[in-house]
View (cartoon, rainbow, N blue to C red):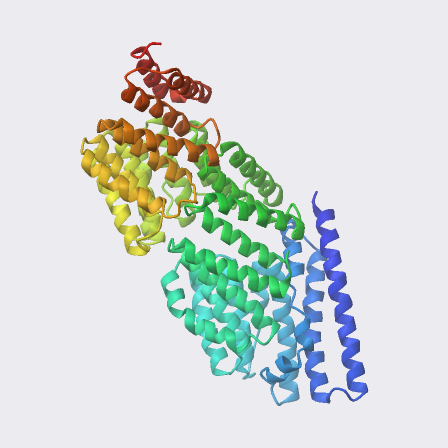
Amino acid sequence: MPFAEDTWTRVKARLDAYAGELVGMRVDACRAHQQGRASTHLFDLRTACLDQRHKSLAAFVAILQRADAEVVGNAGAAAANLPALVGCDDTRALTEAVPPPDDPASAARVAGLRGVLAEAQAHELAGQFNQGLALVDGIELGDLAYPPLVAEIGLRRGSLLSEAGRHTEALDLLTEALQTALASGHDVVAAALATRRDFVRAARLQQSREVLSDAPLIDGLVARVETTREGRELRGDHLNNIGIAYAVLGQIQRASEYFVASIDARRAVLGEDHPQVVYALGNLGLALVGSDNALEGVRQLRAAFTAAESSLGPKHPHVALLAINLGIGFTGLHRFREAAGYFQRALALQSELFGPNAPDLHWVLSGIGDLAVDQRRCDDADASYRRALQVLGASETSLDSAAFMPVLGLGKAATCRGDLAAAERHFRQAHVLAEQSFGADALRSADVDDQHGDMLLRAGDLEGALAKYQRALEIRKARMRPDIPLLGDSLRRIAEAHRLAGRLEEAANYLQQAQSQRERDPKVESSEAAFIRLRLGDLALARNDPRTAIGHYERAIAIYSAVSDSDILELALARFGLARARTAVSGVLAPEGRGLVDQALLTLESLGPAYLPEQATVRVWLAGHPK
């Protein structure tokens, strides 16, 4: 692989340090026992712990010797996540751990099987989930009755199942293993099972309410083992899981607080650039990108991106994932050139890592499609969404949950090019996928309703659009706190339907609510807040209130100028609106107003033929307001 040498340089340094520390701790344990500073029992506990660490290292090195592209891509994170050695020098943790079986033969079998689990974990860290599962599934306990080992097997198999995408199976197994661990007093493994189970529930199955309901119990379980290094690591995992749960519910402020706490907890145990710190930084950035503070979200994602390149290497799969998230963040800010740069970097890296037809490419291809829709490159968007379905091996009528984003995207692309019959077909399929995969009242269903409503609005079916928007709002209200900024997007859409229907008072009411949702913190500026201001200006002009319109347009221009590209449609429309409002107040098109209109028209012309309707509107208005 072209990046193998760089990866090996990073991995070798970690492995050399790990191996050197392992040897040193083994020598220290022998000397302490020889010199009478440690009992035979403590010596046995330490050496057993070090033996397990040695097996983990040996298994990982063996995997590296026959590495494929996937192993090379995961090697940096895997090396950083080898089981920590410091626990083998923690007398309290060693002596409080569950004792091995009294029978020496049984104890030897347990040690041997733990070696198999160490090898399976090495495969998991390297991204070889099926190989890890094969090892675990091959374990035969026979007449060995030792519940702590059963819990450890459940932890490893459940974790591997989740990584392999079999999340429901993983949840069932982790739950059963957690019961076994608790019953046998295997506290550290119980805490590990509980946190892993919560990750599956929050991040994979979106069972956020269940995770938050159980959070106090898991907190107490983690606290029981927090005197150990592993327990302190689990504290960071627990905080991260709660953050994910709040993020799924749209409670971004709470999510951000927990992500920050997770970052601090992980840094304290693992160091600044450890992969687990990088992952939490990325979670924080992604949560903020989905809030009204996308600027801060992009800043955090950039920090995570830089840290990932440093600790994992520039060719690591997580670098590609962070590049996708940065592309999404910059798209939301209407900074399209930067978004395109990160999407193309992610696409190139994932194609290099996994091949040009890897299923994982559907995420970045969907993001590229969304960017093309926002730029009215309708055919490019359609091609990107279809390519996403192709790498998934799915069709536009697929019932595979992974096809949800591309199918929804096909509806957006069809709306973009004015093929409303095709858009209707795709949105109906997206509704089926959302309800089947996430539930009829899940937030993904609300996303479909919004896009379906946008299509109906364009088709002139104002009441049909309004019904879709109202349903999306009801779903979000049921699943989110009432102060969530995202509710403002639903309210803004409802207002637009009322405005176009001539119900200006209703439109004003909903837009004012939307403004309140999006501008709770006046220091935070977002493109969505600017768009609401743009619509408020349009509404004020429609109500013959140009003085109020001026304030809204000026605020929209200020926000867009701070957060977005200088050549976007919305900024041009805000400048055109401001010129119209000032002209309505003064009765003449002043030179300053003419400058705003010329600037708006220049932007619209630079955007190309897809923006001819807006260009025509500006020219017609100018014709009626000569110099």
